[in-house]
Image 1 (tube, one colour):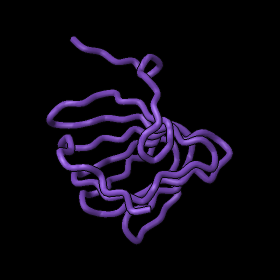
Image 2 (tube, rainbow, N blue to C red):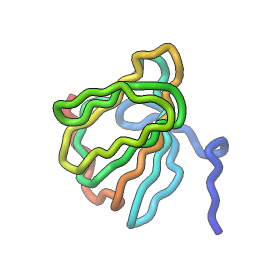
Image 3 (spheres, rainbow, N blue to C red):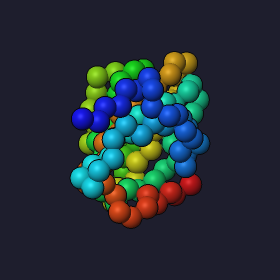
Image 4 (cartoon, rainbow, N blue to C red):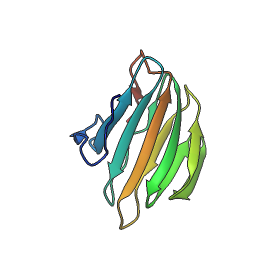
Length: 113
């Protein structure tokens, strides 16, 4: 049995420049933990696979395609493949997000800005 505790997973900067932790990777899925400090954001990007987000802590603004919405702890958000999306933390608190990509992407994410 393989286990990974979030407090022990290595924290690295991702291509967006924010802290992230890889929690799970297989050919079927990928799970990342993102940590956005106040004022941080992800770059607009397009993923080649479906993604869903679960807000673990804080509140933030999610942009998917032409829609923008403020979401808070306990919210799940669906982001279909091939559609631009990004996150903004405009609050004064940390925003922690669980990111699940299904299946594991074999193509790179396309950064837009």
